[in-house]
Image (cartoon, rainbow, N blue to C red; front, side, top):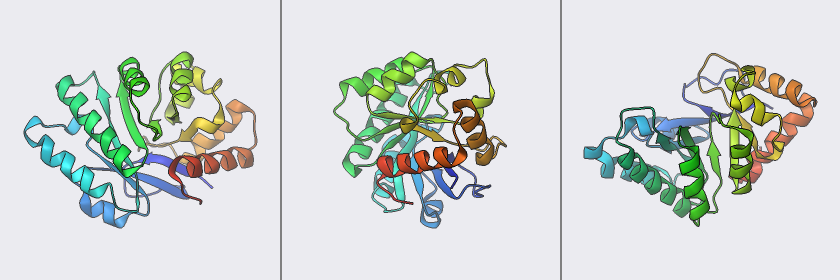
Length: 219
């Protein structure tokens, strides 16, 4: 079984299970998906409509097929006011807490800040860092605080931080994703199994268990 934890496009590729990440204003897509997450992406934040947009996320968060909130997060590489990003992130973290669902995080140049927020919060719900790309010590610190890390095309970039981290972290805190980059989830699984020198069956079994532990869903 191939589980794709982060994908936006409507097709599923070769994944057996997809957690479709839809945006706050895509209510129709939420209704049509088996499993999805809903969030206000940091790229889409608008101060003028922030209250309304967060209200949409909160309303859809209670639907049974919405397994997670997000993606939300902090992106310090885009021209969106960072204070407004922080406000939107904190609000969605609270929505996740109230709905008792995991939070899917988009993080660019903000790992230290998000780790600090996690350490200082009382949130027990898992946080999933999609497209994780940071050094091993950051990976260990996030995992120690109850977070999961999701990998995709970064596993094919041997010079990258994510590649180095993946070889060292426990597999019970890992997910895989395609994020619409033209790579199949099967290819990601095969690369991961090769890098960790384990069988595909063992890897699939572990990710299936991770899904159950994180989302409370048996597949």
